[in-house]
Length: 344
Image (cartoon, rainbow, N blue to C red):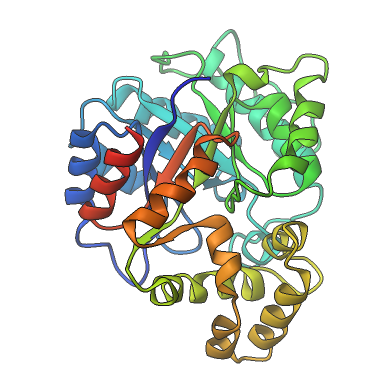
């Protein structure tokens, strides 16, 4: 098995840009991190910060975790990917995800149904643009090219720009069984937003289903699994856990509706069904602080490394033995240095 890699997860912004991002990016590259990642929700976009901060680097791969499909047509996404790949000397990793119905329909004004079919079609068009083997056509129902109807003047076009790489790695964010299988079939890697090294066994069958489909791009041996690994070093474990309780309460309780929340479903599959219901009910009733307070420490310890350095070192072994190929770390320069010492 290849050695475990580290990535810096910068995520999306809060109310304003993070002040220390340039320092973190420089330190990650100096320490030997493999990659730097940005994200988007409904505020900052993933591409602009990646280009800006990535321009200060020379070696690390630059990834989006994730660009939301509904934010851009697939040809616009391919244009941005080609442009950024040229500007960074071939270091882009294109992470894509469908997001959820609240964002897709409430923010982008696009329909959410059939997310798997949309993803398959979207990736196909992006790859067609990057291959540049001819004018781009697509007969699918979600992103038809040329557009049917209209003026009738639309015609298939081929990118003016010759891509630096005709194949840019594509990583899919996925949480549900069918979406995970789709990632294994059509993508070069998988980004599970919540990863627990002790509860990933059931995902193995979903991944294997994708790997064995006709035309699958990868196998388990050359497929990336990019796992978010939150780290908080603190001699007080409960205080360390407090740093993550509000975030988990937001995702379990508020990132979706009661009848459709993919993040909620992940924690149910991890064995925290009763806790997840309690958190969701409190959050949706407007009691956000109370929802955060009932997030159990054991839930956080399943998907994060928290506590004293010695505890983190001991629990890291499970991550190193898991299917993860890269651990995405967020935190202070000291946190990055600790993980580099323990992993690299």
